[in-house]
Image (cartoon, rainbow, N blue to C red; front, side):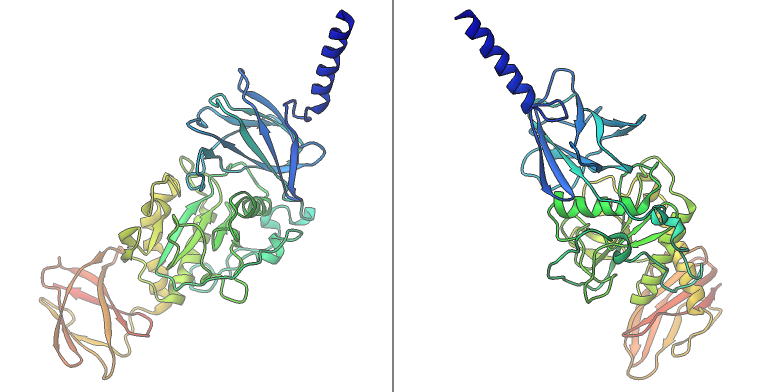
Length: 426
């Protein structure tokens, strides 16, 4: 009887060991698709876990936890590098929390997870974005970024057919939207990454296969070296008009641009800001947007035309170091638009006197409709002015209360590009 009990215990232990996954936990890695595998793990007293996707490689991983557990003091370590687990503030979960993807420049087969604050079983998602040819691994090797810095032309960008090579294209019925607000995000991924194609590919798989979205959420993504990637696939429509999934569930009238990296405390590179400004300038010129203005949105009754994600809902995105630059970005974009639009010439609108010591009279050509008049200081600050209808095709702009100085007056006629002219107030 004793021999039978000993033999039974030995067989039970052996069976348990043989059922363990290569990660050393009592669970198997289950393949969901060629790009995604998932493993459910049981917490241990140490809060440390050896992760392995088995024979497959992974290029990023995501952790989902349950209940009131947190990602505080949690990280992933591999090849001497440590990556903190960052909460995805907008993952749509009924219960628990989800991390943003921890992305690696090169494929991995193992990693160490530090997760000390979990009390219930949790899941690890292994993403395998595959590899592009080595010649295309670094974004800067492919093409220059901006055709003509300081212009209003559309900047060059990497098409989906290039960065998505080898991955399945999305298949769904697209929606499109006119644009009133340009929303800036950050991906909160590691600033040490250099393979920007790989970053975009992993975000794409994360959005579509982990979050279950139809496509990548952003219209565009901007890499730290200034390379612009086309994001959400527009199908037969336009890249900047396809409706995304990036602004707190209220995406109509918005275009989303994601700055790749974590800018909570790290300054974005000059190349990335220049690329962002080039993209926003082109879009504002194309759609005749008032980049110094604001307008109502379901999430914000007075949302800036160029706004940060955090201005719509509770989030730290796009990080403090990008958010605090948005006012300068608005002014830079406005200055470039002025140069593109030749602000010293107004061909259809006239106003007088100039210089003026009081209010300014405005005359319009017949059968035109004046939508807005704005006065902007030479350093880009917009000043509100009153507008009084003086009769058919005539208005009086109330400017007598403004400080003396040089201003730019912007006229917006219906269905026309803005027109500009300098004015001196005495």
